[in-house]
Length: 287
Image (cartoon, rainbow, N blue to C red; front, side, top):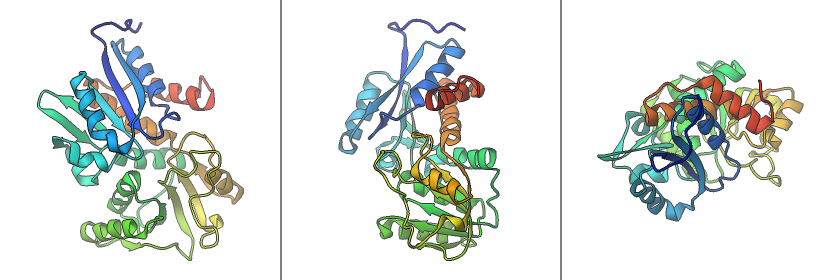
């Protein structure tokens, strides 16, 4: 279909984050809107955490259809919503906002997207296995709770501020008592290392882990939620250590597809969105 020209009837969506220049979400969503002939557009906006309430309210006043929220807004937004969908309540983070006549509704489309991407892209098995999770922010919290719900045997939570990891560990103990949780690095091998920190976004970033306390040769699979750069220092080191490794492009795809369906009420054109991401991130038109 031919996408209508921007006019007074154009519906708007956006992603708010800081930093945000790396985002491939506009390419993905605008390709999907065009494929369905929708007079919608999607933009990326740099929003500092202290300005998030005003930014969300401004988008509502301007008639935006919805928002995505990325680092560092996913936890902050929970208390800013008029209503929380069951997904946002369950995983205690908001990455998708829908504006309605009754106010703002917060959703979490990250949790299912993480698991879907791990299974599709890494072919990794979670139940009964050991996982090292790096990061305890919004994405890390969601990942930790979702991994626990998938019945991993042991979950190692490592964060720069240990108290945040301890909070998540306590929550897992309450909700999923059968999962063994530690807030330290594993001494033995793990099936998966998952990076939910932002370390790797900048060229000067190092690894998001203490190499003196954990060697990547202890891991079979490594997944980095960062997708740009396509190969982070962590992924490069993981492949050098013989691990099977993938970036977060699949997670971005699946969380975005669900958000698209929440906003538009239409089935997301998944193949179109995947091709747009591949071209935007890798420069590959036909994956």
